[in-house]
Image 1 (cartoon, rainbow, N blue to C red):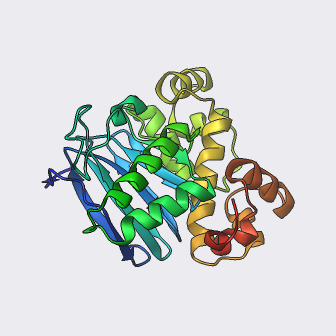
Image 2: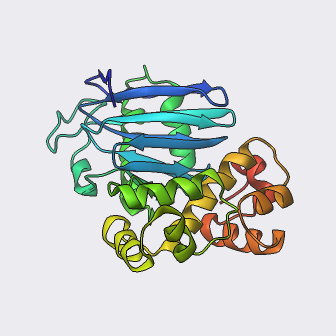
Length: 265
């Protein structure tokens, strides 16, 4: 990423991004929680892309160069959190033991109804510096530490052979070709590619392709594309098969995707 902005303090605020709008590459000296109450959020670094619908948030560690992109209209909520372990006890930016999250790479976290309301409340009036708001931040951090991590990431391949295969799948998520056939099209052997998927991504080719298809499905759903159309464009044999995988991955059905902020999680 070039032309990287350095904003020492990670902002805490709510803002709206139009579909397709981006926030260019930048970094903070603080940690940050990035949450989208509508639309689908994508956070990209040199290492890959993390994506999150409205029942997920993305943890961005201090110093990480990252960029944001909105898929669909994005109601974005940003929470800046100090990176040091021993902040001043009377500062709204300070909350002891925050770094005990122990996450040194971007991570997708589950957002339950309580954490969602805490994030929305904390970003509603960033200028507020009252004891009540500091206590709200303390509870928010407690809930962050209790949030399960979710494997919603598309890693960036470094090996050119792997990158070529990944590009083919991204270009056409419905492409039914096996890893062997994709390898034949790119001049790489199936065993070599299988080893590269495991060593670089920590997952098998079918697991990675499912992640890729889910990411494309979220983007299409954010554009109000019908569920059946999304299923076929992303390579599922039927809408019911797509709905099953989607529900197991995100905890709700694709048909309710654009209504989800108003539903209990």
